[in-house]
Image (cartoon, rainbow over the protein chains, first blue to last red):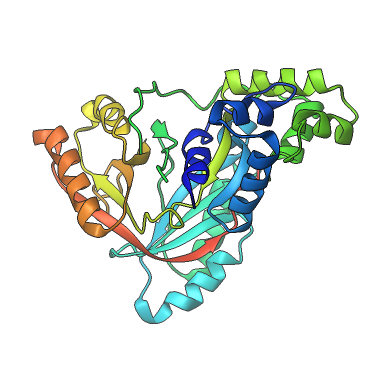
Length: 147
Length: 174
């Protein structure tokens, strides 16, 4: 990664213009050409340095359900339960974390009502209680990482 | 990470007000924008809608918060942020709003939410995701939050992720 890659990462985490030739506009701001910017973006996505480039949608405002949930799973049972939980298409992310509550996952559903049904199904299929922790208020989302 | 101004929190129960064309735009762009000279024209051609219409609708979704922002999402592990902790705090309910806004302005906090307690197993009601190059850096960030909260910090913990079990991303309800 060189200075231009870093400038692209640091300057393009939001505010990408909505206009006829947005890459040209960004490129001239960064002191490079449109072709070079497009080439760099492709490479950064290809290498996995960037995981996405585009609009970030606000899931709940699209009418779906979203929540964070946790379970306290016995270590010897962890892989079995992880496989059951991960098999639900509504489970978007699932992380192992260091705590008595050691499995944390995000549920994203087509409708808000569906959240409770999926939680009940996970409890039934795994035999573990699910702690539902839907957000009650959002204070900030959207860190800018400096490259 | 760069400092940024405080953002006011917004309710999430606003009417989506999306029509069929908006939904087509969302489906066409949720995995990314075309990397061609005129990306909005490319989407327009794909959907059979005028480019001006696409741009107008994207602008409106930005203004109404349906689109949080348009840009790049870095893989923070690839950028060297290897220590990612979910810091959780037990603060008085009547102060969670005020304190959450304050914590959300810290430049190392990527997400900050009020979530419910589950007593006795889970006493924490304020969640702040923090990111550092190593755990020592995260520990210093936790100290910063603790000193900001002062006596409102009735207990806290940091849950480091040890393994990603699944990461498919959100499938938007469209």
